[in-house]
Image 1: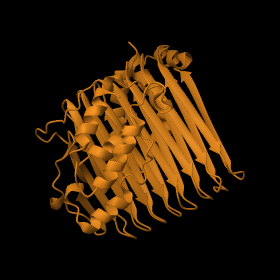
Image 2: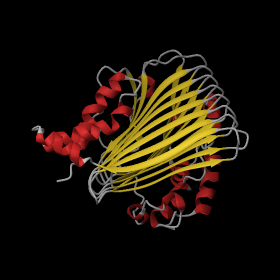
Image 3: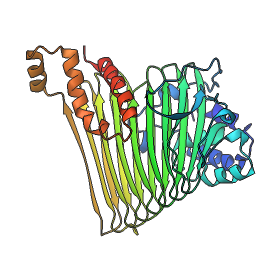
Image 4: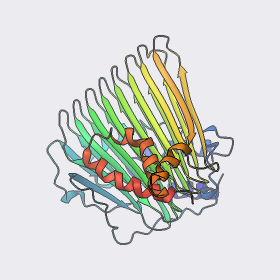
Length: 419
């Protein structure tokens, strides 16, 4: 077992609150699983050496960092600064049908609802998810009443500014026929370790528009996940954007628990020189008549490494399922690397499923053509890179978010240019 994990387990013994029963179960599972070594399939291509010998040091909270603004987007911001919730929720003006509580200030009714979600949607196989179960005292519960249509975007920001560990948790419950948009937005480049996990319970006929922007860079180590349970005729539209850093890992699980549920997920990951990004996704079809579509596209810079593992699991009773998974990757040099593994595991016989993966390099002919027309190389590469992911960007439901994202992607492309 690693030095860091031993210290985390020791620290977890002191955590005591209304979630203690589940925390103890997760801690026991964590001790049984142990450290995910090189032979662990889920971590085969992602070394954990930067965490293994690290000291488990809680980040010290300083001044609240500047919050990135998004023009023309109405948001309700919940800000975690180096792992601490710095937003005073009591001062927020919330629309009718929306309740938000911190885990530390949840009343009896909220505690019961939180217990019904906490560690119930996120699979127990996620080692760092178990870590988060055991030690994450900072978190929020977002509750949408049945039939409520919440217009402002609830934005959960995880901002990392200093060395240290930070663990945060988000729990979301959508009532029947409710609608909500949630943005999980993380940034930072300090030598930090962040675990940030979110669980979403989406009731029958409810709709969740979801975004996760994992924009950590530099020495930051971010490990997290977003996990969804869909009721009957529930729908999910999720957009993921990830940058590479010393260690970046996201796990996404979508559980079709009700018939006629629909899930769509688009993912973009962009890695500059020497960075690492790992995306693992699982689409669990447990009941009949579900549909899911996943498109993941990655651009991998010189000497960078990306990992993609996408799995569609069709259970025995999940007849009439329609599911599709596609992963496309663009390598910017011969030193770029992608380990991609799309998987289909089907136990039902009346389904339509497809999966595929491609890996390509920049088209030299297209690049030469643009250079011959007087376009600077840096601008030409931005244009070619953007063309590769443009289809997914244009599918973002909210125009204000797409407009905010475009210049950030252009800036990112300039950092990825092969010199």
